[in-house]
Length: 263
Image (tube, rainbow, N blue to C red; front, side, top):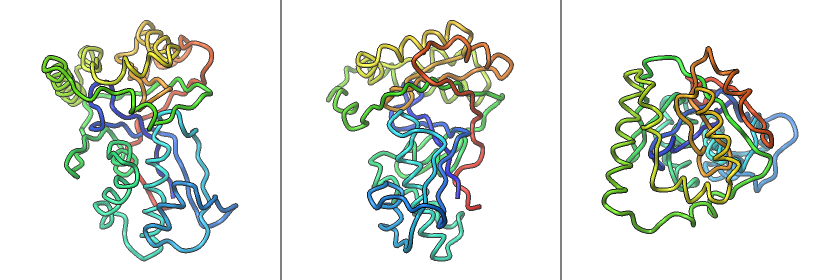
């Protein structure tokens, strides 16, 4: 079984929008079994899975690429598949179970459904993209704890800041659906979480600025970080990748059109 990684928030759309990425986490019942403490195994056991579960990820955890969300989706899907359920019929239950474990639904929804998704109130809608985009990732060697990063967030927002983020999120959805890539830089501005999180990972801000300077349409802190992500024109993806600073691994990936799949 394969489940894609994801990049969430995309600037202002905190816990509400995520993008599935063309790098995956794989689970199977063959190979060396993962530890019982692994999030995929815990999700597998919680959903009634029986027997060993092997986990192989083509992307690192703790970097803002949706590792735990993908692992939990994989574990629940594996358990339900073992019980004879089809992927299409189980999706609502997988979303609910994996979101409960994860604590937020954005990464889970993208890994489960693929594409660019908006999620709220237990409902997921995939956004149709009007033009082809690639994602350039800058992935540093160090990790960030999601729980620690969330403690940096404010308990309250001003009216102006809330309106700012609502407007940018709406613009983000409209720009992607209409192919208005010139609006994406404005659409990914944020006043809720990025500045607070970037204050602890200044090299990520440097990577974001480098991507924009090299022609990326937009750049943002991927999830809770410390990775940076950027939307780019496929024709100029290598230019953006080459401009990224040292201190991190650079990946050029497609938006994964397919979410979790049983192989």
